[in-house]
Length: 420
Image (cartoon, rainbow, N blue to C red; front, side, top):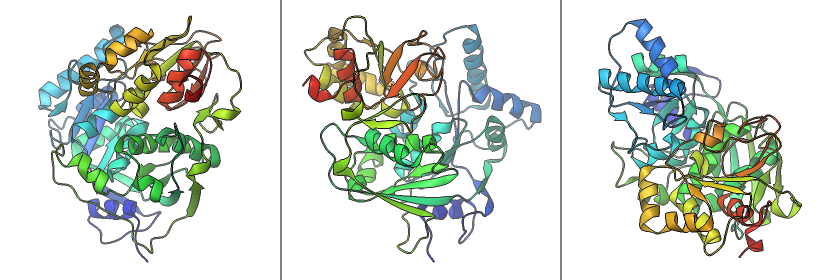
């Protein structure tokens, strides 16, 4: 019996020839990631241990992105703690204001994560990097502290689920829609502690930005990780940015999966996930008349340059509806700069939207878009739990950038076809 791509990566990092789901292993970590919410806890635990040095200053990544630029004194103290730790131990991958970005867009962009890696991060959306053919998953801050010291982490090898997507995507259908549709089918616990392997002809043609979006939201189905076998599209993406050698792994033809699910993609339309769970996904034709107060386009899910271009193609020559706030957040400084070069920032501003420096801000109800009681928001973010973006009696609807931009123009949840 062969092994899945997930099992192969874990086996290599555990120095084992083979392993099976359920095995308990201690594995070498390639990258250990923390942000301004989770890293301070890990740093405190690390310092209490009194070891005096990190396992490898080149294998730790610290990104102040959730409440940065600092929104208040507490967040300033959190970021200060990270900054001082990075300075004290000479952490290579620490990004300050002016060069930072949203962590799960920044690390692939900078070539910090490469195919074949094993990555842990004290952030649940660390599963994003599976799009590069890496095994990546979220951990707690104390596990992160242990990795800072030892360069290892323990795992129970997950079972793998195989999702096969066939057929051509329809108009306005992106990776965000494929993953929302998937979560709608299996539920928010449908892949609990499983590796979600996305495959099939549709995935093979999917651009990297869409792959990153899909793997980002594996956790929204309860997944331990999301992963896509690397191919020519992966090679084109990583070739000139990878800072280390990389390895392409693929599942064996006779690998074992706990479940296989096939989707006929031409039957999938743009999706909207209703409050208060990502599994409440409906096709855009089923949405009905729902007025909104705010639109957020960005976040680690859809803050890529491709997402900015999609939004711009909808907003060009049009205006955001009166009394609707439209907030657009490019995912990194490089993406922001490219948006400037392409004239997208000016286009957004002319449409009545505002553009923020890279930040997670509104996604977690931190700042730059907190909702008041009774307000509704269409967001390209990844979660719409009760109170996620503000007041417990506000509502968040998840959608792709095209639907979000169209909704900003009409003032209600809308298909791009309504404004194009």
